[in-house]
Amino acid sequence: MWSPADGGRHPVVLFSHGLGGLPSQFAPIAATWVAAGFVVVAPAYPHTNGKTKVNSADVRRQPADAEFVLRSLRGDPSVDLGHVAAIGFSAGGTTTLGLLHPGHWSGLVAAVSIAGRRPSSAFGGKPVPVLFVHGDQDPTVPLAAGRAAYKALPWPKTFVTVPGGHHGDYLNPGNPEYPRISQTIRAFLLRTFTQSGAGGH
Image (cartoon, rainbow, N blue to C red; front, side):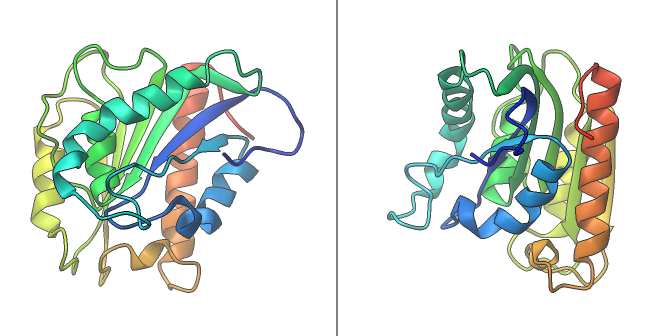
C-alpha cells in the first residue's frame, strides 16, 4: 500500500501487475496516483508474481483474489472502499477487466486496462467507465486483443493508442510517451471519481 501523507481517508486504486511482475516495479506511476489523493493497494498475486513459478492459468482466478484484498481492508479508516478504481497492466489488465463481472464490487467506480485482454468472464452489473491504453507495436498482447476487449465492453469507455508503444514501455518515466500516458490516467481517475462523489486533488 502507498498512501497520501495526510493520514486522512481516501478513495482507492487497486493495481494489478502482469505475469512475472511485482508491485514495486510500478512505484513511479503509482506515486502519481498517491499525489492525486488516492491510496494505492497493489497485491502480489500468489501464482503470477515475479518471485514465484508463474502459472498463467491462474489469471482467471485473480479477480477473486483482488476482491479478497478489498474485503481484507474493511475497517481500515484510511480507505474509502465505496470509491475504488481498478487498474492493471498486461495480465493485470485482464484481471482488472475480470473485476467487471455481474455482481461486481459495489464501490467500483472506474477501471483502467493497460495492454490487457478480454477476460474469460462476462461483463455485467452496474456500468463502470473504463479507460483502455495500448501500444500499437505491442508484441506480447497485440493491439487487436485490446481492441477486442474494448469492443466487447458495453459501458462508457475510451481507447488510447500509444504510437510506437511496445509492452508497457510507456509506463516508465524515461519513455517519451510517459508524461502523456501518466497524465491521461490521472485525469481519468480524477474526472471519474469527481463524478462519483469522491476524488483526490
